Picture 1 (cartoon, rainbow, N blue to C red):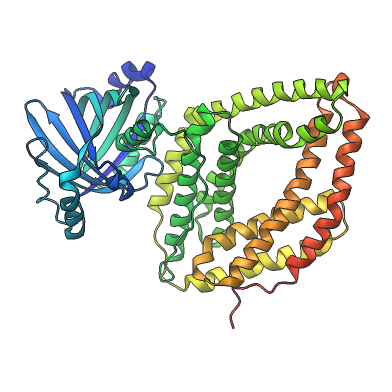
Picture 2: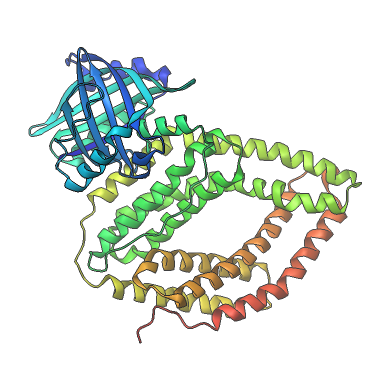
Length: 492
């Protein structure tokens, strides 16, 4: 079964000339091809649902039928099954597909296949040999994706492994990235074409359940979890760059927090340089996005009930204008952060480091998970006791500890199936939400302090203080309910 391994990197059109002059390409004459592709599916998009792409590609006078099985691309790296064979348009001869189940599925919809969208681009292609025994196809594509009247530009680099190792791919990508603003892309041309065809707005992506193999090595499990976190982040980066919807920034921050939590969970097993190098860089990005998230919450959640309660307060109206300006500025900074070359390098560096990790010993992953969760549960228990009836700093420490425990439980959740774990997670989520709302009030006070004197009012400060006091009793009740539950992952 043929496997295609490639790294896909987007490039701003303004940097195309810089790529063509790159030293890596010096002395290599490129092949130049015009590639026209038509993608097919049924009227009900059966192949999209099955994550399969079928296309005819015209290359000169010849047509090629290609079948690809979609696989999540993380940090630009995609490894997927691919079959390609010469064929006449619309004949759909799937005999080259050696996966019997997939071939049967394709044969069953053959008569219903129809054009859905197309891509038309010029490809410059070089064969790079970075070391003896390694050959990489470097393709630079510029053109358009078209679906009806809609179209979207293509300007991207694909590095496909012909001979060698995945490390060779990353090494070449790193070399190019040193001087070019190349960004690892998660979406293939087919995925972008379907999105264009459907015309649906981009939706925020949430974290998905991770099915860890109990018999896998602990480092292999870490790799799986960390790559899922990067996938979660990349599912929202375009929304941050192109939309004002707060959920994209929120989910991006959740993805980074989950990744940093995973680094802490597996800290005893990770090489020291992996932890030190990446946690600090991800923390910097989280701080850059945090400002935008704080102002989003203040403008969309904290201010509206205050303004509704005191509609004639002039200071509150001035506060609203000030907050909107700060929100716009912080969102611009968040867009810049996720468009920066540094972010692109961080994605590529992190993915390369994760792929390079050994699997580790195939010891009991479940035992490792139990030990990890027990330590975090005991820590949260101590923090919860200290937070009962206490001040904001104590509640904040509990919120942070609880968040780390909850993420760790979610990483290992499918190792401990059952209703007890579901109830435990629901109770943790309720307490975390309450602590989060109280933290929002604390942050709101800090943001209020940064406002000009004309936007200050005793009304706003008093209202925030009253909300905090009302929530304190509810939080104490939620803490008591949570700590009364025995951890559901304990033996016996």
